[in-house]
Amino acid sequence: MKPLNSSLTKKGDDEMKRIVQFFRALMMILRLGPDKIVELQRQALYDSLTKLYNRRYLESIGSREITRVERYQNPLSMIFIDVNGLKPINDKEGHHEGDQVLKSVACLLTRTCRASDIVVRLGGDEFVVLAIETGKKTIKSLVDRIKHGAQKLPRPIGLSCGIAIWRPGLSLEGLLKEADTNMYRDKNDSSTRRR
Image (cartoon, rainbow, N blue to C red; front, side):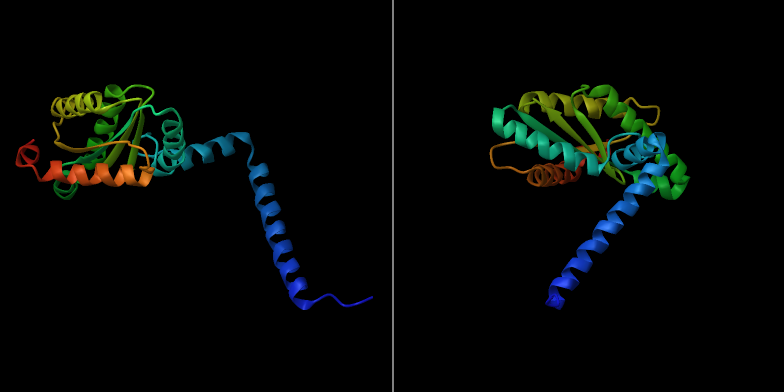
C-alpha cells in the first residue's frame, strides 16, 4: 500500500477537526433544550433594551425585501432616525434616563408604523424603519407623524430623519447609506435642532 500524500492528510485532518467542532457545538445546543434555543434566537434578533429588531435582523430581512422589490417592482422606503440631544441627557441625568428616552422613541415608532413595517434599533440613538410597499409621498407623511409624535412624548424629544426610496440596483447597504446621509442633512437643518 502506498503512503498518503502528507498535504492530503493535513487537509483531511483540518476538515475532520471542523466536522468534530461542528458536532460538539450542535450537541451543546441540543443539550440546552427548546426553550433556551428560542431564547438565544430571540437575543440574536432583538435589541434587549427596546425590544425592537436589531441590525442583524435588518440585514437578514432587508436583503430579502430588496430581492422581493427587485422582482415585483413594489415601492420600498427607509427612514434613518437619530435621537437629538441624547448625550446631554446621559451625561447630566444618567444613562437610566437616556434609556427611558430610547424606550419611549421605540414605543412611538411601534405605534406610528404599520405592522408590516420593520422597525429596528441599529444601536446607540439610531433607529431605522423599513417601510414595505411605501412610496415617497407616504413615507414623508410617516416622517411627519413620527416627528410630531416625538414632541408629544412625556419627555418631548427632537428626531432627525433621513429618507431613502429604493430604486433598481440599490442594495440594502446603499439604501441605508442614502437614508443616513439624508438624516445628517435633516440634523444640520436649524429648525430640526431646535425641536
